[in-house]
Length: 304
Image (spheres, rainbow, N blue to C red):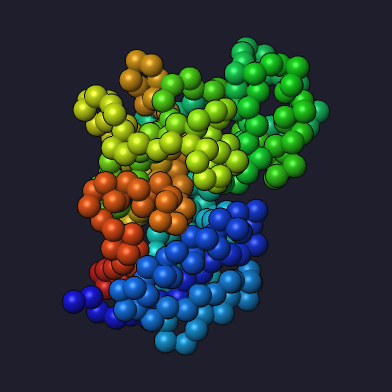
């Protein structure tokens, strides 16, 4: 029988991904209550974090700035409270897409070619060809994502992406199959293939029901599946990850994987990608949430 715990779920927060976080937090809280846990839900205020008395562990259902960039992790460590997911430094590395890429390259993990921009007046870089993707360096949930198929569209797309933060990553657009790999307690879960019914996997296709098909386990050759999972694990270790994450990986036509980014606090609704992968591995959504909590408590009981 599961031991009942007093858990505080942090959800909402100040970022552009607030609405997604509120949905994740509500789903997690409901799942944990279904297992008999006492659950409080808190919408945190940065710099004035209030955790209910008696909380034994904090479940982070935050996304974006403050929740994923190491800030709330640092606040919770100052309070001496165990929390789910990656620590301060791994969160910082993973939230910054350029830092992630540098860590991957240092570890020998294949990632897409990239450039960095901070000025909306920047010109198209020499030696590059379309198509490319522009992404705010420190946003998630495809916020500010821009696809550029023609050089003449670059300036407009750059200005739009810079509007979501002061720095933009431009990377080659990998033409291939889009996959994502959940990682739980050091193991790669079954690969999920992401197939938008039209266009690209942008914010609209990601969060509008029926706009994207998901296949898990992905219909891939076993050797390719293994390569994808190993690349995801290598990227996870490169940023110093712990407990769980989700790694986005493109697969070129020759089957070679290319890591795009590491999500240390992935979406946690019952239809999100990490829960889909966990379900394919035999874990229900409540079981997954409980496992994440137990990993945090295990770490507290056995500090390194």
